[in-house]
Length: 292
Ligand code: CIR
Image 1 (cartoon, helix red, strand yellow):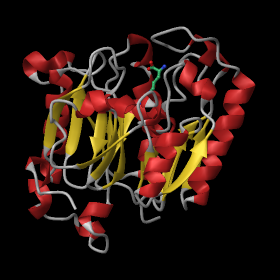
Image 2 (cartoon, protein in one colour; image 1 turned 180 degrees about the vertical axis):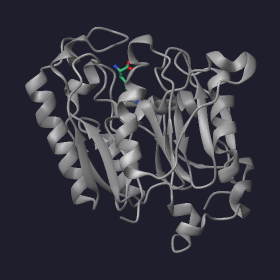
Image 3 (cartoon, helix red, strand yellow; image 1 turned 90 degrees about the vertical axis):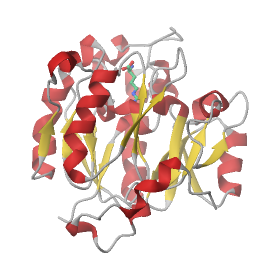
């Protein structure tokens, strides 16, 4: 069991009226619904840090379908939005919004080619939520940028990694936006040359995080139980806990074994095509909890 570190002091926070039945620690991984978007043909032009080849669109769609099926097996009702050819990276819906039990927030992506995805995701958020919020332009912070890939909601707080896509103004705007819902937002650092904070970590339960050693170094996640990925398997860190299963990208056997040994049920999914454009398990869906 983890010591109650600085990250866990939020536990006395009052719980939203709609969620009385669920322990607060479980709210970060118990979901009923997910929003996905089918890969567009233009995914071949998706952003990538290093060119390791062009994604095969047909294979990507097969993987995407298996991903959707895994979410459904985990008990989620899925909505798959149509592809957006004008936005090559729009299959990575997680970056355009943040879904919390109380409401959804439209993000403001830091990649110029992805900014327009936020507007496109909003109707689906409105179908799911009564409360859909935009980030405020805060005085000098009007230039704030934030992508969902840099945001991890634990059982107790919202952690946001500053990155090339997410700046301090964007984090401040998020803090303002969720203040009345009672969330504490804590700014952390994404390691240099890593795309998103969650490229290097994934929540396994409200207080346990699968993490790369480079992200754990420095102690910014102290207070959580940290499970390191195997050396050389850093790309496995972007796991997603969905109800009773953990989705892991296939091809990282030592990390899969570590997570299983820690008591989790692991489902491994092929991710080769998304990986060519720096996509992992979390970015392919927006997961949330609704009563209907
Ligand atoms: C991008 O660079 O924005 C996309 N090619 C990959 C986004 C992956 N998103 C995520 O990990 N949350």
